[in-house]
Length: 397
Ligand code: C5P
Image (cartoon, rainbow, N blue to C red; front, side):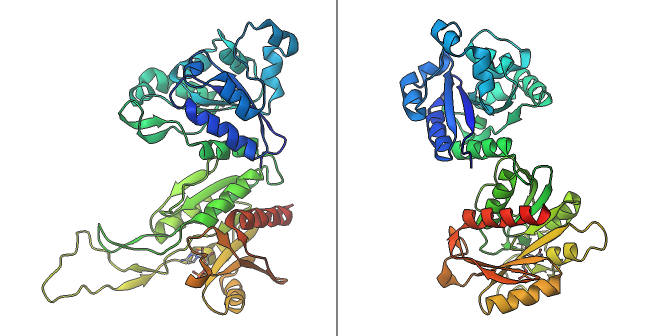
């Protein structure tokens, strides 16, 4: 997804720097060329030799290295890249960026670059929450700097809270999104994903086995083609991709509201496994176990989000794509479903337990449109996503 892209990776001096070595590997796996720059403090955590070995590039370290200046000055270095990534971005680096300081190679490159800059902050939770850092964050956002993270969790210093650097895979997603410049550039897309949770009472709910993997892969693939993606997701097992606008919901009703709020869009893909029924009147209090008595749950139908959007008289997306998870007569049922709901395409798949598709990494789908059905060979969910995304791009072109 990053073939031929050049990333200038500035590694700041924080404990998360060890993850930046893995980041180099993962960026290269996607085809990117990575040129590392180490701050003085970063060298306390990772060695220039490791960064150089993993990137297979020269590592830049010092502003006043005359050989480097003769070969490639700092201005040139900061502009030869397609994207500048700062990971980890320490509180100090963020402060320098916000203040426009240029007193070492990293800060000078950041001031001299004319390319997009993506930063992955990492620091102690108190440093992150300090008003100075939050002021700098606001300044950097206003300057158009892109962010990924920080994540919340346990920190090396023993504290807990926001401040952990994003995981390398999430940073790769953010890099892909930042560099996305494909056929869907300027297009607005909507993707629903994951299961919904329909409450029975405050502690119990009805759910289904959808992991959200296919919807997440789709959002990622559409974003990689340059689309601006709103990702409306129920409580899924997999983390949403970076670089998309995430709207987290629980119930089908909330999902419908979020979908309506995201319109208008050029195309909408409904990959969510929305519960067909909800409990008609969920209890406000936990239902008590009573001797001999079983609770009677009355159900009500949930809104059909796909059908609602497909049949909109005004503001209907130019292309509406639904999914059909079936366990028998897949193609016939899905073909009928396309007509009944009024969507343009249905991506049908067999989710019988024997296929291992629900919750698995692979999918075998049949794409049904107005012109017929086309079965694709079994492939990974990300390959299915890339293929659907490419077809959407063709259809919108
Ligand atoms: O009717 P069925 O659930 O099989 O239809 C599946 C398709 O409809 C999927 O695209 C799913 O996201 C969508 N759907 C929806 N709202 C519902 C039920 C299904 O958007 N309440």
